[in-house]
Image 1: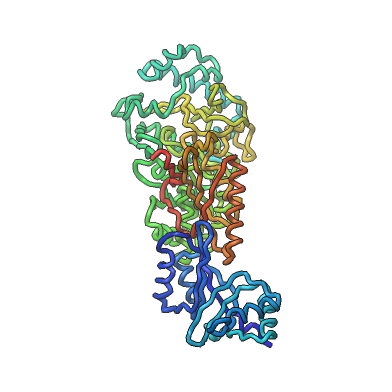
Image 2: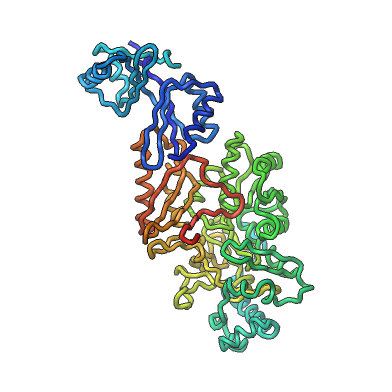
Length: 144
Length: 433
């Protein structure tokens, strides 16, 4: 099995915690006609990390870097959930039973159902175990 | 090793001291007789030129401070007739009211000679193209380096400060081999070059930096040298002494202070007694050859130490070590003395943070609060909050243990701290606002 097709490139951006920083990032992506598919902000004391799945991660990376942003690629996976009560439980139980530890996670719900985006430490191992457990992973090609 | 004036530069120490004694004696007689300011000062101190019987008797003479220049603004201390003056410079006044310095033709010659020897000792000479990116004008840096560089037969590219992209284009097109500017401005030039897609290491002929006019550290030197592929030499001087006058030789072990031009003492700032070679104290300089604005035992407020052994380069003139801090720049945080250079020293040892930093001092309740803002470098950002928190903890820990005072650190985005073209202003002290 080719586990790599399930590995998705997330962009992570270091940002100071002050007004206007998110607007600056979003404006830059808008200018390049880059669409944001999923997105979260993690906050720590005085700074934050903006994480996003976009349709053109390389283009986003180059644009933001040229503007001086501190930006990195991170590999994540996306698990399909049922968009109904108990949907998250179903997936979370599979992950728990498979012994997969989540570093962080965020979710979105779209017209094709709900999706849980996960950052895990052993990504290929996690992909195999999630698929073995019967859950559905979205392929990279869904995003970019 | 190449010397500009080997006879003087390699003269045995005893001969140099004999020369210094003669020059000092002449200077003191002249000022006692012709300068009302120095005459009164010597009277107050109860010292007569006849009391100067050996070189060490210099310690009988009164000190002079920056405030003397301010109190006698603009030219009351001048000891040359007005028509003998050929130039004025005016200090930037970063630490108070500006001070005015006047020069006779001989003063300019002495200054230029000092720099000609210095630049030669830093490995420069005919065939070099020296980009002078110090400000030209009232500030002494631009014109001082300009004439010094011309004297040694180098080609001067007088770019002054500003218009950085054009500076980089000219550096490339005219093959500048050396640049003279503040270390802050060179960092700025390096960053702008990177943005333009110019790799200073590979795409330019630059191999020497003559950097000064603000305190900087050994750690910063290592960063600049590795990053830009140049040798970075410190340069020392202040407008009151004429301007930038002394640089490090290629050994990079302190500035040679030309003994026939300046007599250096390192004193204990509290007892005002001279210290031994190698002991850290306050630099006190007597300029032995100066006509318009003589300086006897001038206390600039710089803390350093002096080495008197012959340098590996063969020069016999004493060296003073890189300035560890100017008394005026010293911050007192909860009763503890902190020099911005100590903070720079700590930061430069941590690869995860950049070269730029800002110090913000404030008062929280009754206590002083020290905040250091520093940029997180690109390579060290990895998406993990914990990693970033760890970098901050490391920086805080390192600064706290070297300064003995609590420090808060804020990591900021690369490129977000102010860049400077001339002297940098790294400290914001909100307590005094």
